[in-house]
Image 1 (cartoon, rainbow, N blue to C red):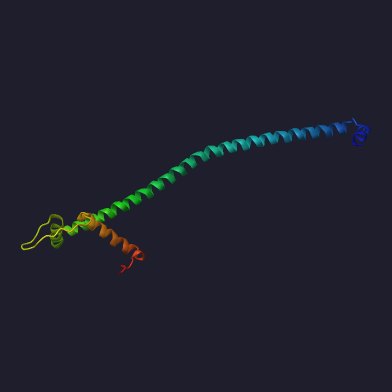
Image 2: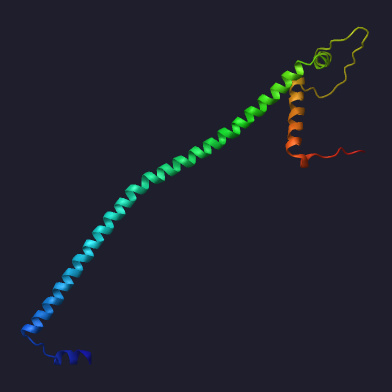
Length: 154
């Protein structure tokens, strides 16, 4: 039905209709031109955005990696400082004459006059390691008192 109605309509071919169709065509061409221009501008903008975003992302990743390295180095520094503190504690122990005498008796079996040495089997930990281990445990308990457990009596 729609096709029959269209075929029955005759087109006027006067100057007014030609001007109207020409202005519609010019408007359509202008719209197409503006659309192409807008797409070109958007494309240039996207290219510029990507060009600027890539170095920013690279710098962000480098900063993130440097932060991780700094945290690892800080942890390692803490471990080294703790070990240095342990060694300093042991040096201070070695400056104590009573401790040196005890060490000589336990490690090197030095005896005083009239003393008898009895060797009892036990797990032997070198003295400097035992002192450092005790110091670490004491330091840990100072920092984390909730970890202290009361000795169990049997």
